[in-house]
Image 1 (tube, rainbow, N blue to C red):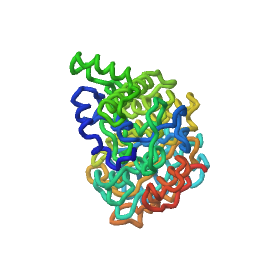
Image 2 (image 1 turned 30 degrees about the vertical axis):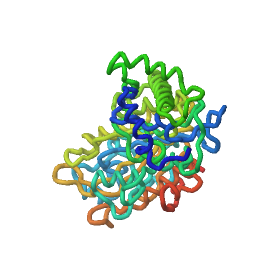
Image 3 (image 1 turned 45 degrees about the vertical axis):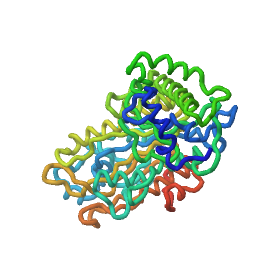
Image 4 (image 1 turned 90 degrees about the horizontal axis):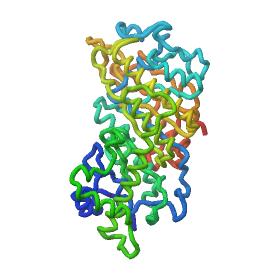
Amino acid sequence: MSLHNNPSEANAFTRRQFLTTGLTLASASVAVPMFLQRSAFGLPMAAPGMSSIPGVNEDRILVVCQLSGGNDGLNTVIPFRDDNYYRVRPGIGLRGEDQLLELSKVGAKGSEGVALHRGLAGIKNLYDEGMCAVVQGVGYPNPNRSHFKSMDIWQTADMSGTGDGWLGRYVDAECCGYGKGESGQPDGSQTIYPPIAIGRTAPLALEGRSVKPVAFETPDLFRWMGADVHDSLVEPYQRIAEQGVTEGTDPESNAAFLMRTTLDAQVSSDQIRKAVEQRPLVNYPGSALGRQLQMVGSMIRAGLKTRVYYVTHGGFDTHSGQGGAFGRHAQLLGQFADAMNAFYRDLKAQENDGRVLSMCFSEFGRRVSQNASGGTDHGTAAPMFLLGPMVNAGVVGNHPSLTNLDNGDLKFGIDFRSVYADVLERWLGTKDSSQILEGRFRATRVVKA
């Protein structure tokens, strides 16, 4: 069975029939998560008797943390020795040891003259341990200051902001052999899971052509909900799940589709819910991001085959009342840092920290000068954070100039797709990232070879 380029069009009638029979999982989206239909769409599986797909490095995991709203990079990684910084930010600029966490004291490469916001103490701890790389001045040519368009550009790695997600293309190409011909046949063996996003909907970055991501806000919602509709649906559902695809059943038939999909739904839902029910090995903060990363940590600990997880931390659109060392921006950075620090302490307790690289980004930074409302408006270049023992710790790239500006905005020095190329080639094992990024970009080498 060949791969479909557009899974949403494949077996459309059986999908509708499947939905109307009540065999569905409750998730934040109205559609059934696409991975439940991998059998019907002919997605590759492990060969009979094997638990993995040959040539795929299942040991390495990528966690993406999206800082939504446009994080103020200039008050995140601060050029505290540049007088121009305090001139353009008289009300929200940070100064002094009680407000700044100076990086040069650690002696890591490239750290001279820059410091972290005091709210990032949890990130600073990881930096001190050699587990944090700060990539300065990241952006792209002809920047777009619209939240939606800029986020689409970041998530597709395409300047038009259209097409498949960059990680969706990776999963299709590397994990599931998109475009490579015949797939394996269902035999009950373990498969590689598609990307998992913790949230109401899956981000565009995870959307591929062959494999669609799973998205859920809480494990309680990731379950079959037919019993909530009517008791009469329970018995036929259980019968289908227990029976499986029987010998003599046409693999292309509606019955086979329902059997495989029901079994996949039940097994995957049970595995994920059982994983996140585990008590973590460390205490996580009670923030929304803390809860998301706690679920990710639990799924990693349980041994799920998922290789890409996606979490989101919102609220960074600080047009007013941003504050300096304290205030709303400080709170957001503190929540981010505390959650990430707890996540890596949990991974270390699991002995999984060496398997997990985290990449943290925002769709754009803020303008150099503060505005009249004590905040900042949409800007351009901003820093990224890469976390984990596999990074080349330190500061990568030069801090953008505060005087050589582009209409009041910072000029980017590192294309974000160069960071993506590094993650793809040096961590996820992609042989040629240009096929996924649809262009060749020099890797930043922020990840150890």
